[in-house]
Image (cartoon, rainbow, N blue to C red):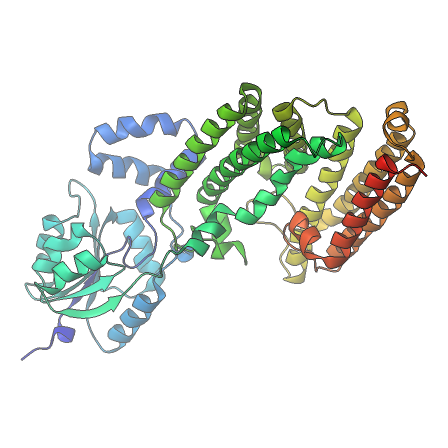
Length: 478
């Protein structure tokens, strides 16, 4: 009598063999190639799911070698293949995708997929499977759509199946193996939302600090609300950016571990979360003020433009980043109706241009250490470091010069009790920028220089001393 493990093993693709949805990824690729395709998507969908898949497949190519596969299942298939078991890939994905996956893994004796007039799903998949391997087989799947195939099989392999569906399958057929998903816990979502990046939105409070109005409770509450609004909106754009950059992230040594690139979180859950965050963000912005809501919209438009195409343009990307940082400061002044000094805005632009260049140089130094020459998803080369070093250091010291001019400005003399003390702040800025660039050259800089400033005790101490000096210069009459 044959054991279940002697029967051919038929394996589903999306959600089973891979941790992602190849159709969803293909749709993103199609929109990325031409944003006008976003308008065409509903038209293609009205023609039916089969026609929709054909239209998408004709316009996109999935890089099978970079897909996030379910490693434990792949290892099991390799072992079963060596044992002589027949293994078939059967998927509702388009045949062009299935064939690429099959060619990459070199595991399958046959490939069954959606093509022509056949959408290989449910009972249709069951019928095709029986024609291919006969009545007796084991099926590996992940969703309720696979239930007809499981019910027609001799045994089931469960991959990332919900507990409820798993119990339903177990009551009808024996289970050969189970490959559960890793739990999508809170820490994973916090990583996807990049909550640590919310620290950047503390820049909203800068106008309040420079106006020395930080004891105004009403303004503090308003800015706290604005902070939450902008942070949620930023997280929505971070998710959108990660979904947009799936391919390039998977080619990056560190970014490939991001929740969506690794398949730890699904594309559909990411889209739903981003929409919910965006709606909440705009609602909070409107409750703050109409003017702040306009600033938030402008911020979201600019950051979206950065994600879609500006970040692939040399130097334009870092200029856009510096403007996004400066925009946060200006948005804070709008939220609490405090005028922003042109000195502050000029200082901000040069400072954040320098920090953006630190970020790019850090990536290029990392590439140089790994013997690569070109960044993935950005038009930068290791050779560009010769130009980026002086630009970045020059931007740092332009910020120091602006601050020096600010010290002697009439409004500074009127506002500060001892403006001369601010020269010690200028010295602190020189030390801070020099430390950043030395660490960048040495290849020990964090991917995000702002995060580094918080983590690095020396830099953080320097910043605290500069803030204390500015307070003394304002309040203390020597």
